[in-house]
Length: 181
Image (tube, rainbow, N blue to C red; front, side, top):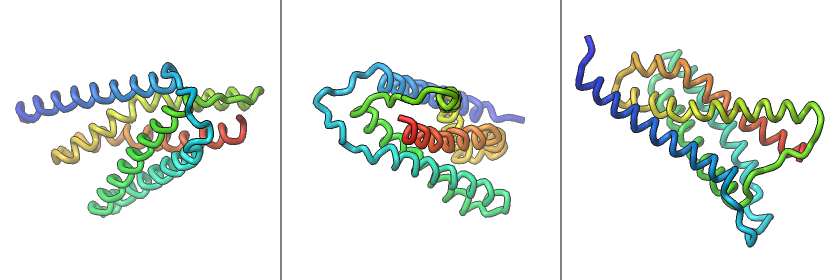
């Protein structure tokens, strides 16, 4: 039997999560594809950020894997610490990503040939799954914080593979851009 008050709270929370996620995604689309970069911006400013972003993505993926392994072994506190670390690393990545793209705009992929199709295939799937990752992550956190572990488990069944894919392909995209632009 379900609690009608909890269901109402869940509906409100999921609505807020979806609105925040949509606004965040639309902001990123605007920032990367429509915002004009400042002509006075130093082209060498903060050029270390893409490498840092790849590192943050890789560390986030590692924390996700460690966190999943921990909960499967019954190590709840270690699971929580790993997942909080993954979320923190992802949040720092997002801030760094916004700062970099606000200065430099969109990064062009210059190489022609088969690698171009590989790059755009990965990039498009990465972007599409990013749309789903943020609300799934927020939902998983919400259900964990409200101790609705059966709903948390249902959500993380989709969250973990999508979040891992987005984190790992973020690293792959960095290397493809670094060595093909």
